[in-house]
Length: 472
Image 1 (cartoon, one colour):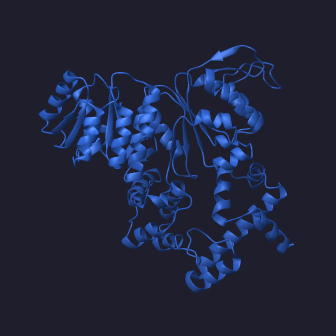
Image 2 (cartoon, helix red, strand yellow):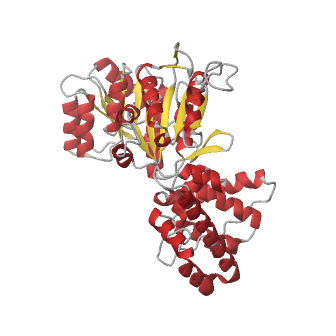
Image 3 (tube, rainbow, N blue to C red):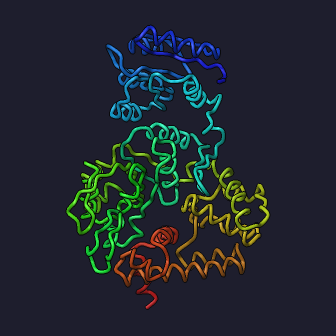
């Protein structure tokens, strides 16, 4: 049972109003009712401060969406849950964009109502909110300890039940794949297949056959027909990661799948029809990609039925202690080592660090700490740059002077390694005319690792050219 809350209930049907009010008062909630949107807005204007508003979507006069907009204008932080006997996808999406935090379809069970109230007012939690850490599958978990991530979690629960494409934005390493898995888990497709395709990791000439499959004889070596990821994922969810790296011609074919859920395998004229929910993720600059024609505008607007932006770790620092402890617990088991202490000085250093690599950098930090077992060395990796930023330096003189004054021999050795690595990356980029995929192959590292290191060392095209000319 939820702790008593002040609830404004808005519904134009007297029978439904009485029924829901009875359910609420059984748990000793204080209930104020309104039978129209105008009456609800007037209540709030006169000073009513409910913890939660339960708002019917379809009402005469100003409807639920208009009422929601006016209520949120009066009180921007007001929590509103929409109620409706019609599961209208378009209106649900509109409600989410206007700030609704959940949606209940009539008739609903008391347990569903209790769970929503508990989640919204923070007095009781449904099973999925029993902890800040939500396990999704092996070694995949979602953390919602900050206000920003709690909002993301609420949006995920809401959009999961609406079968529309979702575009996931955020820096590399913020957890876009984890969010995609959460949406899948909370959706009616949860018992079906979830597949991820990294559009940047698959060569452009192979990506089409990977997604859509091929017939025997479609190309040299195609001796047997092979279904693509879309067929394998029928009735399930597919995540197209790094969608901005997909070739424009292939983007056109994907657009047709989004429009009518049909495509043809390579080498075939027969149409294949599938029922697949598409989630797409990217960390590119969308306006720049659209201007440069890297991303088709029509595809972007198809994918952009609903957008969720994951904040970087530096903007949700209250989650860092939880993540550190959870990664330490998990990895100590994986490596069969006793967990190492996270002392107050080390925790303080972690909270000061900007984590440019986000969750991936934090995870790797714990791995290195476990392997090395040296807290001082671990903390030294998190020392801020002389210019006040986080991460490692790219200027050799600044790096070496920092080593002489603060880090001693260990720091000098680490800085020399960083300088050599940055030089190797700059040379590979120059040799490939800044084709990052070719440079990653030349360096024998993953494409994502290269992107991370380019950002980590602050390598820009002009700088790499200067670096090479200076070293010639």
